[in-house]
Length: 172
Image (cartoon, rainbow, N blue to C red; front, side, top):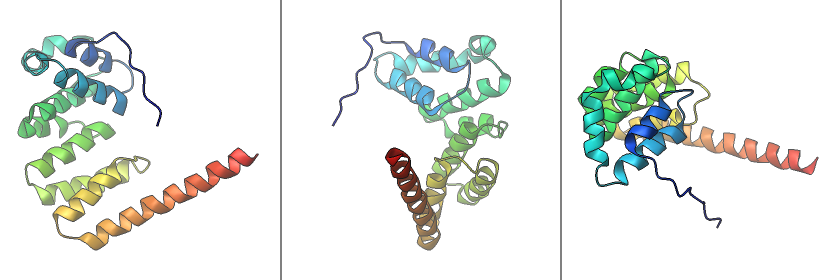
């Protein structure tokens, strides 16, 4: 098993969030934010201060949509699911906004709403690798294991197809 090497430089919550506010929002950037928040003693309090002063903090972000998506994610990280839902409901152009909106709806027990959001998100972002797993979670929470199984089977089939094409390409 290969060990991953990390940089000796440790960025604070503000720096990591500021970096996420420019360019494409990726899973890695969101992960970096969570790591920065939860890996320091002051991370959670820094997060709260940042959220409280969000309008001024996020002025340099590339777009209002990106700003709202990150704010919703930060509220989600703090456990403010209702606050996250409120902000993310406005940002349905971004797969990550949808993803954390669905997570918030599931966390709040709004299963019917979560089901509608999952269907809408999967229609808008058919290439997302993360949304099918939220659909599986939704189906499990609503006691529909057959539907969850169909998605798992499709994921497995797609993975097998991808592995086969990777092997064929390697032979060339």
